[in-house]
Length: 520
Image (cartoon, rainbow, N blue to C red; front, top):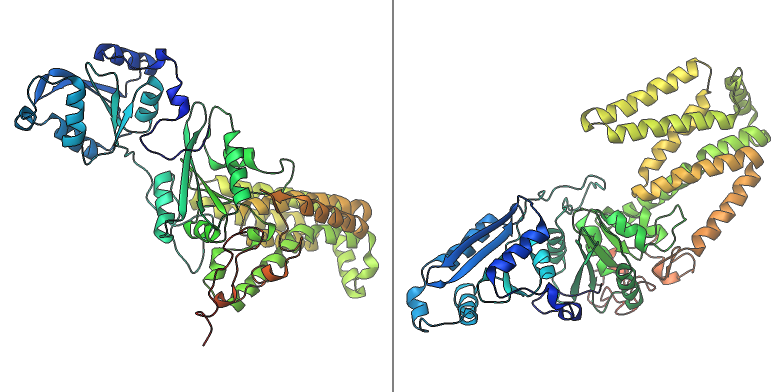
């Protein structure tokens, strides 16, 4: 499949279809064909009538109940079926079906978007898209009137990416509504939307959005090619698309960024990134994705630069705790006890007296128990989920200490590690750290700090080898780009963010006119 803009023109594929797929001039044959294609589905509505101003021509109105906007449809049908006899009489009573169609489109349906359909495949596409089709006896083509209007969720606050300061508008499952939310923020003709459908059965609407002249042309071409290669029966969520287009399959780190916040996508587009919208999900994909991007939030650009920089450093510090906390505790208490102060060593030894398991088993039991509680809290109803996870952690931790199964210090380490993992803004990145944490615990229990050091080297090498649509994953740290350091760990004030990321926006990289935006 290839990208196309939604209009009334036909693609080469449509023009080359066999004659067996084309519509007939006889209305009864067309109706029978459509009934055969859709089977005995009860929500396919077929209404046989005739035009009041020209009763010689029979008319069939076909649509799928529930997919159309009934108010728009009634307006269109009323304009079609009302008496235009006096106006039509001016042309003469002896008119062909083609002339009747021309009269309908140019004199009656001028306010509606009308698309001509000539074969059964187009009929299926239009009906399943929520449009209303009408067929005239004696005319070999049908006409689809734009009446899309199924019910959807209202625009609400984002649930997975909340902020203290900033817009409270999240995407919805309706792709057209989501695209409109970006249009409201970026009012420029260079904002381009390219639409297609993915899925042999679901025919899911997918759209890519980018700023022409700013987006990375190589990444844009790569996005088109990867979407074009997807050949699957159904796409139900943007996560299905993500798995097909991601650069590295066997990596715990996400190379495609996803968000439900409209302001995040708008900011990414202004940096030269490309957004991928999928109908049926509020989560929009953003590529290329960089490692540091998963530790930044939109609120960083709504607060002062010093506050944003402090919060970013806090998140990266929590990244270190969430990844290495239990492993460092296991490695030091098992192999490197001489590194601890004497008083602390005595306290830890007293706590571990009578504990039947080594530090690794202690940590694994507590980590697994906490992961179970966290997953239970997510899956349970909201009214009780959070309470169950918190109370469960307190009760299990206290009971484990009283039973002499784990030491109090281990409970403290696991608790701090769990809290630190909640600071990570991206859910996908937090899951990656949860996976790697167990690997580093194994290395620490086997080789101590040496094992952790080797693991860090392997992790850095792996991160440095990753790419996201041709852009190195660790940009701008590796390769090191000095001018892009202004918006990584630290953030300069808005008037200091002069250029877009150099490896993402390779054209029109100037973001701020320094002469007009000098600080006074």
